[in-house]
Amino acid sequence: EVQLQASGGGLVQAGGSLRLSCSASGLPFDEYTIGWFRQAPGKEREGVSCISSSDGRTHYLDSVLGRFTMSRDSAKNTVYLQMNSLKPEDTAVYYCAADNEPWKIIHPVVTATTLRVELDYWGQGTLVTVSS
View 1 (spheres, rainbow, N blue to C red):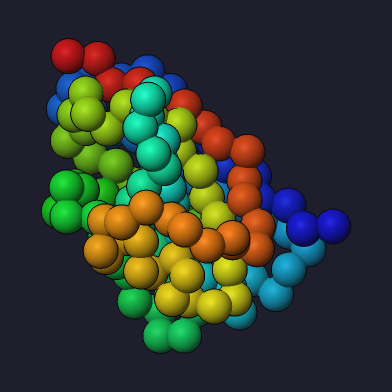
View 2: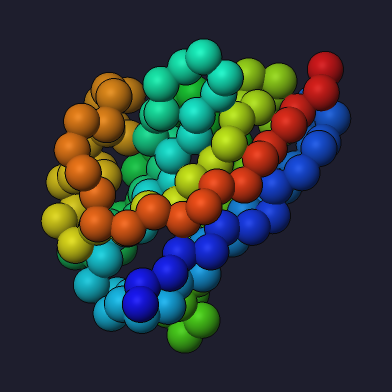
């Protein structure tokens, strides 16, 4: 059984930092592109960042570029999202997702468009709340 376990969310003041983790089991981790998505109340889910299985490159939503950093630890089957200089508009439920077709995750992240395809696997979400 494939599982993605997201953790690390919480309440933080504006300007603060959090690190999210997404641990995967039951899948060939390095063959999957992993992405972070977020959904705020009343808004559509948007791609935040991803790390490609094909070349290891990371991609970011423009609004988080320079503030968020995604990394991958293949030995632990875990990806991380270090979030610095958090803003109230970063408040959302953050989900990690995995797919073995990189474009499915890269495209919504780099184009800031709504995800319109099914992805292979999703984690359960972790809530990030940034107070002003």
